[in-house]
Length: 215
Image (cartoon, rainbow, N blue to C red; front, side, top):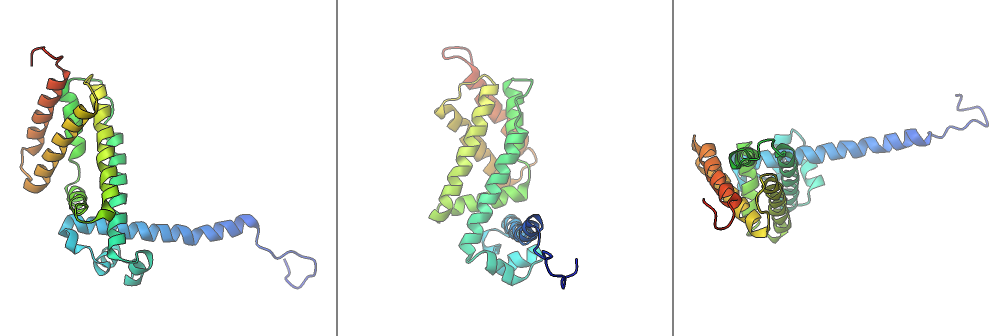
């Protein structure tokens, strides 16, 4: 098309304009996610104090200005990293805890303990932020979303095992799993997975036993 010819339309087609507008947005989303991923990795590697704007930018291989551009302060960065980590972990756990063909207490306990202990660095980062929520109200909503999501996963597993799945039963099993999970993250015992399976199997067996029945 000749730009000097009168009567010709030189406007960019709407679909091309939309595609051009989306590219910077997609790049920005990728950069934000890379920075959040870097923050999560640093939490697992070095704890809460390791997450600074400079360290996150270095970990993500992005300029320092990018961190400050997307996150006005460290608290915002940590809150969004926590939210992303919780969302991903819950998605992973829901996908992993299928209704097993074997509905025995041992099989369901194995599925739950395996899914609760997958990636130690991610677990460390998650617990770093979860504990920090006790000091920072801005993180509490995300911490509650994590607890509620875990309860939903446990409730589904209990239904699959034919166990009662009221609020008290769900909280009982979820709290047991959380305690065992923290022990595993902190102590890193070689037999921690086996010990956790045994404890959760015992809990599910107790729930499966009708009141007044044999334990």
